[in-house]
Length: 160
Length: 265
Ligand SMILES: Cc1cc2nc3c(=O)[nH]c(=O)nc-3n(C[C@H](O)[C@H](O)[C@H](O)COP(=O)(O)OP(=O)(O)OC[C@H]3O[C@@H](n4cnc5c(N)ncnc54)[C@H](O)[C@@H]3O)c2cc1C
Ligand code: FES
Ligand code: FES
Image 1 (cartoon, each protein chain N blue to C red):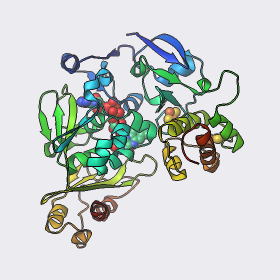
Image 2: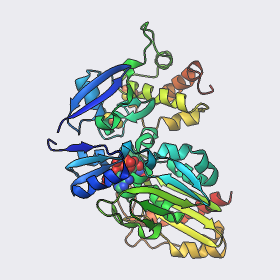
Image 3: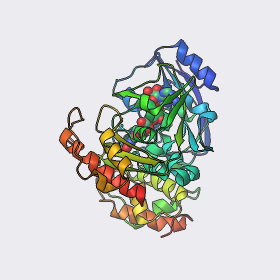
Image 4: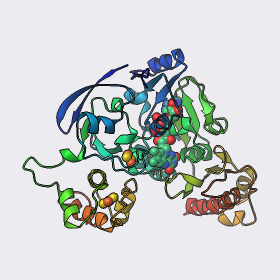
């Protein structure tokens, strides 16, 4: 069986004919060529594949494309302003050295954007707990937490 | 999976008919347990019946002295619901401790209960509060819902629609998480309503269970000291690389004391 799916990806309307077991991450990377969304574990553990579905963070390796019919998907490619500058969360990761190899970074940033947007008064402890679904093998997390705390007030969210 | 089909019914009746007509079809809620099983080859359904298009299965409502939570309500929605936080804060706390934020955004209470993972959190609350599970055809008391490892009283084509939690006077949930998955190595839910005490344990057996010895001791006096002389036998408890059966048995009264202390706070 082939399914016709309509959705929006980074503000563009997209239609796709896919088999019903197609994962959202497979669609993004292999059909849309949006390879900024990474696959670290493929078992819903590492968070590298995190994207926003209607503004809410999900692990795209653990959701079927069919389940997001009609939704708006935002990937790391979709957060930069039109003028090519960095999103405040990206700028903060850069300024705070919140990345080393960068493999976890797209998922970290999407997860952090959701956290700051939906949990306005995130303290440092709340940010650490809020990022539990994202693993980083390089940084030791401290600079990632600093980056999120730095970006939050700029995004109009959490207290610093 | 070349022959897999996908349905997104727009009523519970249609979902029930699809499930009845195809014995190999699988109901799909958040997918947080199904998709991993699909990838592992543990599951090869003929079709998915996606319950995601049924808003009537979603949301939290206070009805008299009970809280009704729709099957498709996500863990995040329960954790953040003002009604749950006000009337059964222990349940909001439990939901906020499931997995991680991304999993909580997708996983649902109905999916978790129907799945009955031995280490899942919600079964402890359903049993520990004496809730009632509602389906498309009947109401199932918590005490007869959990049947064994990944096994419940639900019929193959039966749809869990909601859970009704009676409001307790005091309640608390304490989990000793397995640090990598955050599933419960052991979790204990305690509640007090009138003279009735319930103590439900998850993570330690094939499915959630109550512990009569702990309940009786607490019914005499609802205080952590009431449990000082009680030990749990390790027979038939779960053992794996994260903890032996003896370790889990030891944790049960320890976590129950902590839960009672929290419930009294
Ligand atoms: C990384 C990770 C960490 C996790 N950590 C925890 C944890 O700490 N604690 C915990 O409790 N859980 C944990 N989970 C499991 C999570 O809570 C799942 O969301 C939940 O067990 C299943 O819910 P679902 O909505 O995703 O169901 P699905 O995966 O869609 O379905 C699960 C099963 O239930 C059936 N089903 C679903 N809805 C209904 C219904 N309404 N009526 C009848 N049958 C139905 C399906 O057919 C299937 O058999 C974790 C999962 C992941 C991926
Ligand atoms: S690739 Fe999805 S969580 Fe690791
Ligand atoms: S920067 Fe390398 S995994 Fe996080």
